[in-house]
Image 1 (cartoon, helix red, strand yellow):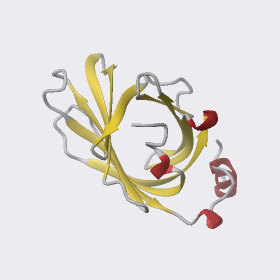
Image 2 (cartoon, rainbow, N blue to C red; image 1 turned 30 degrees about the horizontal axis):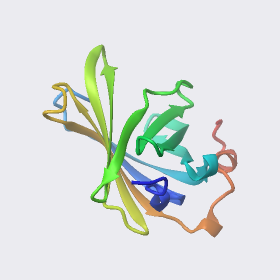
Image 3 (cartoon, rainbow, N blue to C red; image 1 turned 60 degrees about the vertical axis):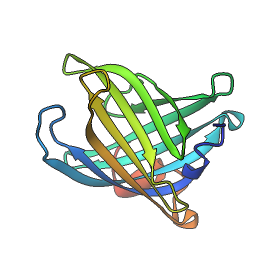
Length: 173
């Protein structure tokens, strides 16, 4: 566990998303869509941030993730904010063990208290997987509702920021 745990993620990525249409509704139907992300180190090496674009079926939006490492607790906190609702979500907190990153928080969904889990797995030089799951029973069982498969892209072919790309695509950031 160290401030380098997320170094695998630095760079530019194409992302294939698969997300449940109706979470916690016992409905297996999914939307599949694409996106991309650029991740850079920050905070003197104790963190990183990404700028991401998600092309949902209902429209494109931009998001930012901030990941910060606390060397005292050896825990990461992960915060997300996006252009649909510019307010930070409840931070996820956790660590990597055995090559898998596990991060948790308590939140609510449609008025119900839930436990949220992020998993980072299948980490390789040119690919990685992120999953989000919800639990309504304190973590005894989980519904995976969002999976993102990352594929590394060539740095030289990437714009300097996702906002530059959005301008080319004609999408308002």
